[in-house]
Length: 586
Ligand code: ADP
Ligand code: MG
Image (cartoon, rainbow, N blue to C red; front, side, top):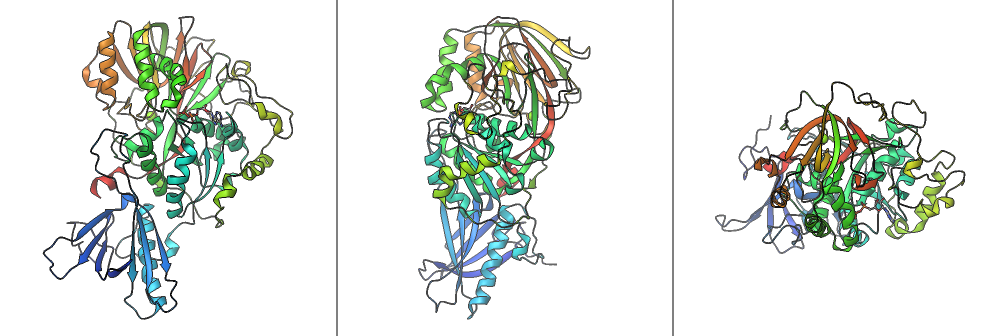
């Protein structure tokens, strides 16, 4: 067995070692060592005491390609390593770009014959790609391209109006070049209206895709998940890995993914680049979904939160500052603080008896499934055109009834529904939906909510009920409420828990501000504020007793009234991209 230690990192097994030139060539030679976590590059210089080492953590690498010179006589082969190193941040969160592309090309010239050099270059490229994708290799592995899964094919759905409307621009300049380096095939479709993503996802042929990625805020991902759950084959459909590339104003899930990977809190383009790198790594982890039922019986699947009071008020009222991006929430918070409301309500829940606030980190990580037919890359202009949209429309199953994925009650029905063949249905507002939970209605898809009773009946005796004046009630499942709101630091994507957080009336404005400021670091529970409560639960019901108010599910407004939900552990699969240990030791 080869127990060769890496020369630069104590305890790290060297998987490959070699001496190469570089391109463009400046006459230098390099000794390269590949370990499980990093590519170590040592420039070979006459005076060995001068430090000429570079360590490229594989957590920052997205791909590696082999190349051949255009000069026929050149018998060398080349491989390029595409990295996006994190820059040291000198200024505040969100103000720096965070990452900058750094590609290095090495010249393999040990043999006189191109084929031999190519085999070496391919071995390095394969090994690097395996490590990026989390495919286990050791120094004993016979590294050959067969180890690699076939190219992933991703359906990218982009909301051109999300956040500050920069999604398309950022996608073209940053995301597409990067995922191309990661050998990802894609088809990019811009949504034309609310619920468009839901319609598309409901009709796609699952076999054509390895994942669906929402390029927007959390709202678009909500549509994707509910589109999958609205299919007759939901059980299979919801296994489709879903990802998010944050270009919205509310990027909670992206914030949670970023944090889960062990990365420093980031906003804006910095967060987008982090999430893009993670998408290239492609690891998938189970994601809890919470089935939410509202008074009219509509059922939808939520991946973030249900909010009432301060949080939902800020979210919806700050819509008018959308052009500000994430800053809209800061301004909205200030405005709301000035006229702080309290709401009377009854909150019932089924405590998760076995849950403690700080559970061990879930480490189940798998790589996206692969092994289907190779797909030709779609040229960008086509993928961006309406052609792709038209094709998708033909696959839409227009004859089925189309329950709405919980749009806001005030929102008009999608105007272009009539464009979908055949026009035998129309979208119904949320209030018009038939009762869903526990009725055995054939149209209600997804797993049964075995912990819930219909909203018309009292909650089961094992539940706890609190009736009080609240400043806010928040049922949150992942760790983040916004990219910079680390609201439930103990939450995991698949802990099977709803983290019920509520603040009761009586809290001072100053104390509330302190809580929200501390939330950026996730230290708000350390303040031991007597008005703030956190309970891990499996199911909950909220009955507003104040006549007017705003309720949101995943940041989108829903009908105001009694609402309940139950968690379905690990129902969906989220592209989380990387195991945090890799970064810690890289
Ligand atoms: P943000 O975080 O900026 O709010 P979201 O992705 O949450 O971004 O999108 C906001 C809302 O816009 C969502 O409810 C989504 O369904 C809706 N939406 C998606 N595509 C479009 C579109 N093309 N035009 C209008 N609304 C859209
Ligand atoms: Mg959870």
